[in-house]
Length: 92
Image 1 (cartoon, rainbow, N blue to C red):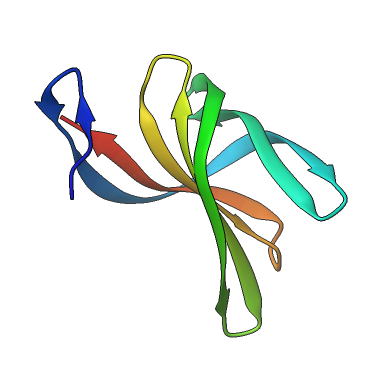
Image 2 (cartoon, helix red, strand yellow):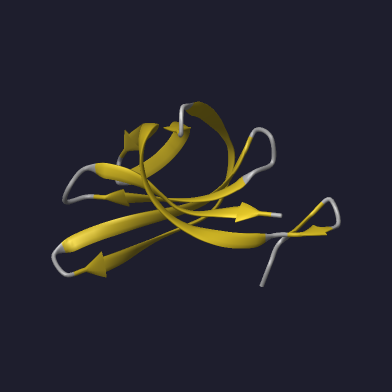
């Protein structure tokens, strides 16, 4: 179901773009703080959800978040490759 942002309907678009992320790792907790995608830096304002998924031998960690300008993203961290990706982005 699309999210509402300023009374407009948003739809998500699947992505699979590798990104650079600054994240906090502490006592089994992982929290993305900032990321660079397509030449632009996004500051994470709020994490609205997080979950993990096993895919074969890999463990993937997902984060639904809102940046400082109210854009919605889903990021994915792959424990096996130690890489981050933008999994989804919500657009008007």
